[in-house]
Image (tube, rainbow, N blue to C red):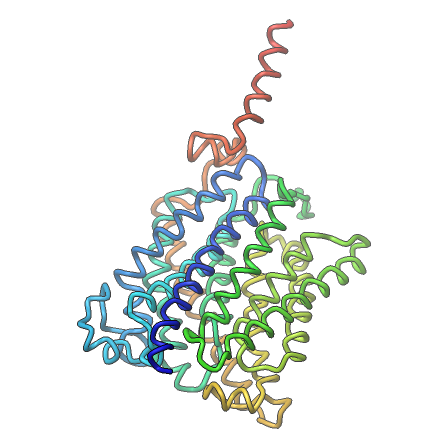
Length: 437
């Protein structure tokens, strides 16, 4: 059996990593569809840049800081994966339980880091300089994401406390959501988003079909994200995680659509998409620890909470074009805390992580651990993100000029329009009008 698993597990891990990497395509479709046509090429293209930057920086420093042996706060060994085969399990003892090659462990964990960075960049949409993406993306992958990853998954202090975050509601999504919020606040709202009295104007995305397709790609990719985190097919536990993940997501879609229909009077598709994503984010922490009925509750509540918080933040003057903080930050908080209520004793015993939740007679201990993890991660990511972005604001500026923003980042940053036929059509109309005078 061990020999068979030795052949199957590496391939399974590789497929799971590819599924998570394919989520970059989902983000490209979702974000491009959710923003205006004049920025579509830029928004989609930055997903390629995101994965490229994350790949290099996570190889150089991030993986070692996250999983290398060190202390309770940071990993200090295993730089650039330059470790003899005989020493791999000693240098990366936090991953020694997974019987797959180091290269595949790296590829799988890289896909997570890249997703977190993609989420963070959502808060920059439609008004940030391209140069800022390079600098912040590099620093996020080196000094922000890996530190929290080490605290929870790399043998750090939160992991030692028994924090339950199976696939990253906090490590991946809350980090990205907090960084996105900080960026959104420092950049300020897009031109025309709010009236002089602070009332929000609608700046609709240019292609709702793209957004829906993006959500579907992300839903499918999540079957690499959550079930893939077992890094093994042994006992078929990945199938159970797939079940809870799917049930939660379905509940989030339905609940968000229904609450939007009740509040807005229309069955809003954008709200349904956000409900799908919020539920996926929420179940990411708890997928291995909760029963199927609890996954439905967690997903439904995530969809509802995200709907109301996205409206609230907009009314407070926060311009988050793709609702990155509501979908990934707020839902990440809820998903992480949810295990403190719903963690099942039998699943806690099977995974060997933490304790049963409050609703199963486990007391307040696990809930307090989960809250501690959320607060610790939020504080660290918010402070470090603010320092980095504030310095960048002073040194090089975060935002394009008003003229460049009005023209659109496709032309002002890249010199090419995402929809050149549409641009030519507008130019032809102008030329025809001039010639007729």
